[in-house]
Amino acid sequence: MKILAITNQKGGVGKTTTCVNLAASLASFGSRVLLVDLDPQGNATTGSGIDKAQMKHTIYHVLIGDKTIAEVTQKTDKGNFDVLPANRDLAGAEVELVNEIGRETKLKIALADIKGQYDYVLLDCPPALNLVTVNALTAAHSVMIPMQCEYYALEGLSDLVNTIKKVRTHLNPTLEIEGLLRTMFDNRNMLAQQVSAQLVSHFGDKVYKTMVPRNIRLAEAPSYGMPALIYDRASKGAQSYLELAKEIIERQKVTQ
Ligand code: ATP
Ligand code: MG
View (cartoon, rainbow, N blue to C red):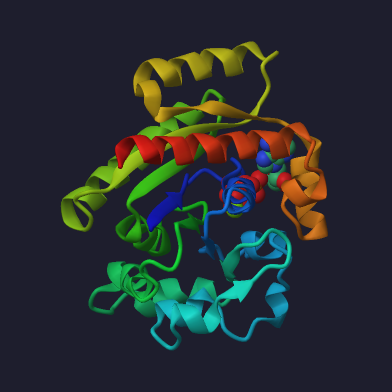
């Protein structure tokens, strides 16, 4: 079981789009996948076709210790993976956990219950380096960083890399950066090409070969509550996430 935190404190870089579409793509290759929504916005929940307003129990109840993961997990009928949903309740966890002993390890401990039941657990982080994100980084084996190739992207990356280093020192010594994913990529844009080249020179083969292009189908699919793979399999967006899933599966074979 590989636990991947999909994180970037910058908002709107494609974390949730990556989680939902990667979950569906990995599942289409036969992997057992759990998508954990760790954002009170609940976008990964809705994007997987689950009505977050109807949820009595969510990841919030898991983090505060009221429910187990198995009790809260839902099956999507849109892509053959499981979802641990979130809604606005999760915003309260930040405050409620702050004085608790072991507040950073709540998710890690909860995930120990489902050990071996999935091949991949994808953690969709909120756009913040908050306690929930620290829980994700503490529980994860590695981190995937989706980013847009813009000028400020590299600046934000150094804050994230510093947080990862701190988590490694204090909470999770084996945490690795799995890879950097270029999202909403536009090859005709000179700046995007330059930033992309800088990324590769700095991070080498940590940068996934797969680039996710800007593709309207990826933006439309969530409003139908489905991954792009189901909404429009032939679209460039859906195809790029299938490619990414293959790259991840191949990489894992090499390291095993
Ligand atoms: P947040 O930080 O708010 O959680 P996020 O990092 O999860 O945001 P997304 O919600 O995945 O980012 O994407 C932001 C917006 O960009 C959404 O409207 C999404 O549909 C759109 N989007 C994401 N990836 C692509 C893409 N490759 N092509 C076109 N639109 C995209
Ligand atoms: Mg998101």
